[in-house]
Image (cartoon, rainbow over all chains, first blue to last red; front, side, top):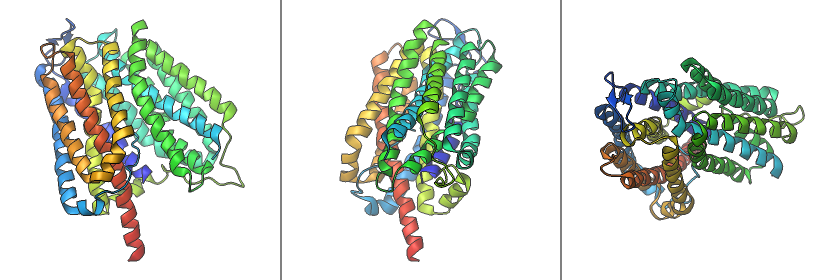
Length: 86
Length: 340
């Protein structure tokens, strides 16, 4: 099971930075708070974080569906397995 | 359960994660703010180049460790990690940065080999405890890595990479002298978790309940990776922070996450079960991501820290619950298959 969850996480660690690279870049450079121009804008920064939020919202909907379908079987289900971090 | 080999394995995984954590706050500033003067796109691609190589080479390293032994694979993977970091530290061009990340990614898939080593030296009864060491090393490394990266960047943006390279090299030397081999002719190794991982994945997705859990897990880690690749760029652009400031924010997020996972999650799972915790975690996680772009000098750093804590709380509630759900769903499926 460990191998399967690791494979899923590995794949996600490829997709996440690629999404970030695609969305955070802005062709027009704007001045950052550090006083230097960056190929980012308020719009591109917000878009990147909101895209990640949208991904999480889909996860939320799937989790709600899962809970409605199977929650009674998992209620008070004992100790959680220690996470290895996302 | 032998103690000293497990300690070396613990240190190996810990150093892997410290190295991984060191990169997160420093790389955006190193790439975008120093002589490389690259675009934010390059930062994302550098993060991805490491992950692609790790994805491809983890099963290969696992298979090599089943055939040639755990020791040589762990030793050479640590040397590769060290080389990758030194290339990053000495880099003068962008392609050298990519070369460093790619080399580190190729050899960075040693966690499956570390897990296989633990499976070799533990019995059924104490295996969970042994694997728990890897979880602890992950957590500790992920908290200390970003903080360390931030602190060391005070002496130069390249210094954290040199430090991480030195650390991996020292661990390779330690491993060479201390770690005994487990794959011998009279003691065949257990097959590493990485072996046949894609066929395992396809089989897992055929079980609808497990497929659901894995899909949620995939979406969580994807969102988490978007956040880690973008956050340093965001704080640089919006707050004018350097690697030092961002490193401390990541360390704060790590400490809150560790507190949730260490002290709270067990009791909450007993009280509510895993599915509600995943739902609440996803909601908190998504809320923090929606609100972070609204922070800036006008809201101050406390607002950013508060959202970081919300993010850590969401992730801390959901991630261990998902791991637990995946394990239980797989168990139920196996039992169902057995009784059919």
